[in-house]
Amino acid sequence: MLLAHPVVLRNLIEQYEALRALHAENGTGEARRRMEDVAYTLCVSTGTRDIDAALVAARHRLPGARTEDDSLLTA
Image (cartoon, rainbow, N blue to C red; front, side, top):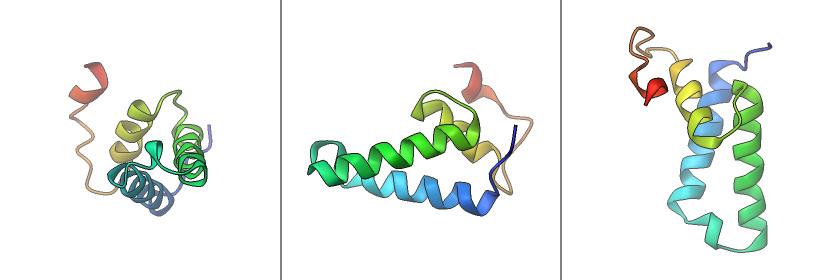
């Protein structure tokens, strides 16, 4: 599996969190589509199938992530 560069992952996480903070899922069609696109890209970039797992996996690959602490992955 190809792995996304940490800079790309950080950018996707920031975009998703900004859209979520703005409640894009309840906004205009364009905002909803953008949020869905970012979520899809995060899933593809991390090899996951849902956004929650994608966010955990993406954060786990960022510099400074505590690789020995995978407690969120087993919850």
